Length: 135
Image (tube, rainbow, N blue to C red; front, side, top):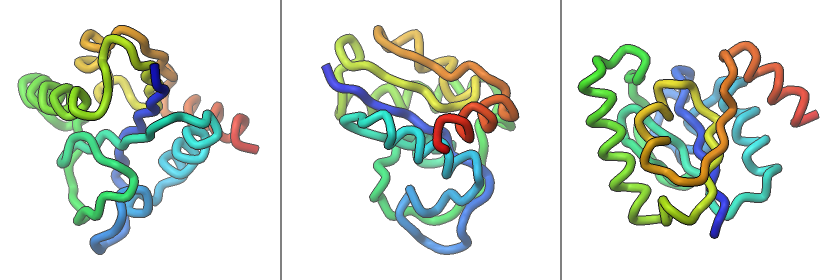
């Protein structure tokens, strides 16, 4: 079993092509990434509304898309795509997944994953938790 942390994308981004871990520049993302790394996982991925599952070193263009504004059908299609991407890099039945995401980024993924933990907090409380944990 390996430990995998999943972080959701954020709106605030650089305005040029960058590695995924550098593209997202909001305090929430930076704290999520710092906390994710402190957990010493085997893998960390970003859940992108546009690209699906992203490795930290993947070079991508900035975009303006969020699951929070997608229709239910679009979110379910996005989740199906991400599950297929996850199957290529993990074992959904054996690996441990830690979600540092909002509800819409995990709600249709979790039913496909046997072992998961989630930070089920509002954005403000998630920020507070992450600030405390990354001091």
